[in-house]
Image 1 (cartoon, rainbow, N blue to C red):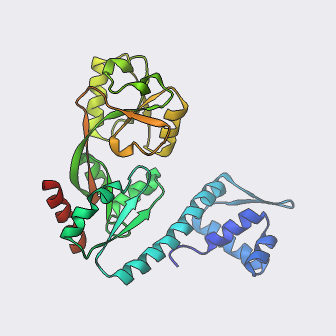
Image 2: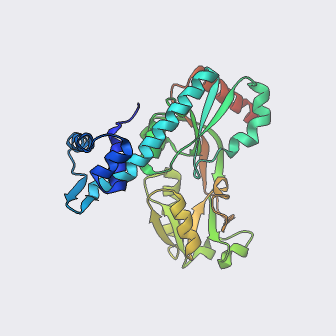
Image 3: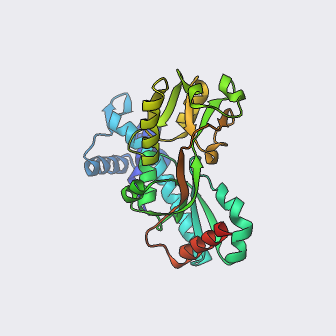
Length: 298
């Protein structure tokens, strides 16, 4: 078991609102449930429940643990399945991390040519929840549960994430707008079209290429209202679609939201995009990366 089984008891008690009901569902005694919860609270040094004659109520800390525990348990179960699959397949498996922001489409596009170079390598898509904490942990531990993640990067980010990358392209920065936005009908935009618009950009410090773009836009086009967001997630795409805002994007993200249109802009801003991997990749991953280099060189 990769996770503390007390977490499942905690979830059952929270859902039931009672130690007695949780005990009935778990086929153990209420005393055993109480001991597990007390042990969990002591281990975390947190109070998870407010106990009263009317039943159990989660504290704010308990609510936070409740949300994360559901993910932790599912992630660990998925990890066990992936480990079993990897053991069955041997060493010649490339595990591709996928999320809405890190799609695996590149693999589908390259697959026919890659297969010619490494026909014995198998691929396993590993979906993950794209949260800031989870993304950081996955990138820092590439090679353990996930081998490859496709996405934008810069040198500082690679140092911060303790990983390496094979650059595939320099992706032009586009604009994403709601299909109902007046700019959505345009084939190409000029920076002046963004004057008096809210332009959603990821916060300063995430990528040096975007920081440079931000500085130049603020200097040359102060009429553009740059609005920061902290982390690239589906919520930002929803915000863009639900508002009259314009959002920075790249072509790789054009299919994330069906009601957003990606429009080219008459500027020269680009961002490196490629395959992020461990600084010390396995022999199989290295052979895969060499095959990708060969395919892209043709």
